[in-house]
Length: 318
Image: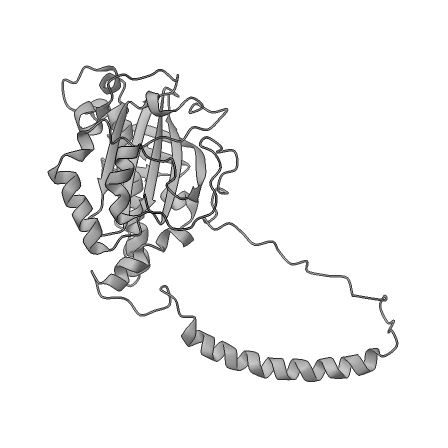
C-alpha cells in the first residue's frame, strides 16, 4: 500500500509511550529558560573589547530588525497556510485538502476522549461506557491491516493513521478505534465508498482491521485471532476511514467473528453477539466518527459552527 513518509511507529502494543493526554498529536516544544546565564563574566564585569563588540552588535541588530519587519510583512502573505486562507468553497478540492490537516491541531482528547458514554448504545438500549487505555503515536499504515484490506485501501493511500484502544466498564471487552487519514482526493474517496457499499466489503472476515494491544492493560492480548466484531465507515466526502474492532478482554480467540451490523441484530446468538462486541464496535466507531466530523466542520466553517445539544442515543464524553 502506498504510504506517505511518516515518523517511525513503535511495534504494535508499545502504547506505553502514548501521545500526552490533552495535548495535540504533534507534541510540545522544549521551553527556553527564562533566565539564561550571561555568556562570560558576572554582573558588572566586561571583558576587553566588549564596548566595540556591543556597538557592532547594535548596528547588526538594527539591520536585522528592519529585515525581520519586512520579512514578517511578507510572511503574513507567503506563509498563509490552509488555516489562514479564506474559507474554501464547500465541496472544493481546497476544502478537501484542508480537512486532511485538521487532526494535526485537534487535541488527542477531542478525537479519542478518555471516557465515552454511549447512551442507549448497548444491548436492549442499555447505556454503555468505555474508558481509553492507550493511544498509539500517529504513524503510517504499515502492519495495520490484513493484506487484502491493505490492497482494497491502497488506491486512496495513507497519509496518517491514528489509533486508540478502549475497555468497557466491566473490563470484559476491548475495542481499538482507528482513523485512517487518506492521501486520496474526493473522487478517490467517493469511488472507495461506493465499492465498499456495493460489494458489501464490510461483511467480509478477510477485511477486518487489526487491533492495537497495550501491555499491562486489559488489551494486553488483543491480537488478530481475538477479533470478534468490527465496523468500518468509509467517508465519501472527506479523506477519512474510521473503524473499530472489538474482542474479549480475556484474550480468547474468536473463530467466527461477526460484522457489527450482524452482531447487533435481534436474535443473534453467537458469543460475540451475546457479549455485545458488535455494540462496542458500532458505539465507539460512531463516537469517533462524529467527533472527527465535528472537528472538521468547526475548522472549515467556524462562523457557521454551532454546538447543538447531543440527542439521546448518542455518545457523551468526559
